[in-house]
Length: 260
Ligand SMILES: NC(=O)c1ccc[n+]([C@@H]2O[C@H](COP(=O)([O-])OP(=O)(O)OC[C@H]3O[C@@H](n4cnc5c(N)ncnc54)[C@H](OP(=O)(O)O)[C@@H]3O)[C@@H](O)[C@H]2O)c1
Image (cartoon, rainbow, N blue to C red; front, side, top):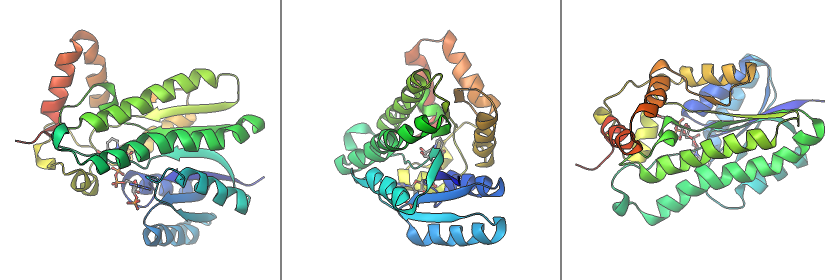
C-alpha cells in the first residue's frame, strides 16, 4: 500500500520546510493551502529533487466544508493518508477589541475547526489500519494567554488541549498524536499577516529548521508536546513557579504585540 503524508499550510514558512523534509525522507505528499501556484511550484521541485509523488489540493481552510473537500480529494485519488500534519494557521496581533470580526472567525476556523475536522475525517481509517500519526503545529503561545495575541493564543491552547486529550483516547489504537509548540520563528510573512511588528519581540526568534527537527523528534519518540528550543522549555518550566497572571503578563511583554 502506498502511504501519503498530508501537510496543511505547505505553501510557505514552516509547512513548506516540513514538506521539503518529509519529501527528503521519501514520503509521498499531499500539499494543502490556498496558494495553488506556490503549492504546484513546490510539488514540481519535490518530485524532481526527491522522486516522491506529490499531489496539490488547494483549499481555503477558513471555509467550513474545506476539510471535507480535502478528504474527498484524497478518497477520489485513492490516497491513503498515514501522517496528517496540521500546520496551516495564522495570528492576528493587536488589541482584542479592535480585532476585525471576520478575521477572528477565519482564524478560529483555520486554527481550530479545520484541525478538528481533518482529524475526525482521517482518523477512522488510521484506526482500522492500526497505524498513523497526527502532528499538530501548536505554539508556545498555547501555554499561557498572550496579551496582544489573546484570541490567537486561545486557539493554540485549544490545539494543545485537543492533542493531550486525544493522545489518551488513542492509546492502544496504533495511532499516535503529538504537538510541536514553537516559540517565535523567523518568518516575516507570519508577522506581516498578523500585523505584528517583529522588531518589538524581545525574546529569541528561531529558524523554521528547529520546528522540522522537533517534528522529526516527535515521529521518532513518544513525546506528546514538544517544545523545540531550550528557551521554549525554560519558559514553560518556569511557569510552575509563578502565578498564571504573571506568566501571561510576561508573555505579553516578550511578544510586544499590543498596540502602543
Ligand atoms: N511563525 C511563528 O512564529 C510561529 C510560532 C509558533 C507557531 N506557529 C504556527 O506555525 C504554523 C505555520 O506558521 P508559519 O510561520 O509557517 O506562517 P506562514 O508562513 O504564514 O504559513 C501559514 C500557512 O498556512 C496557510 N494558510 C493560512 N490561512 C489559510 C487558509 N485560510 N486556508 C488554507 N491554508 C491557509 C498558508 O497558505 P496560503 O496563504 O497559501 O493559504 C501557509 O501555507 C501556524 O499554525 C502558526 O500558528 C508559527
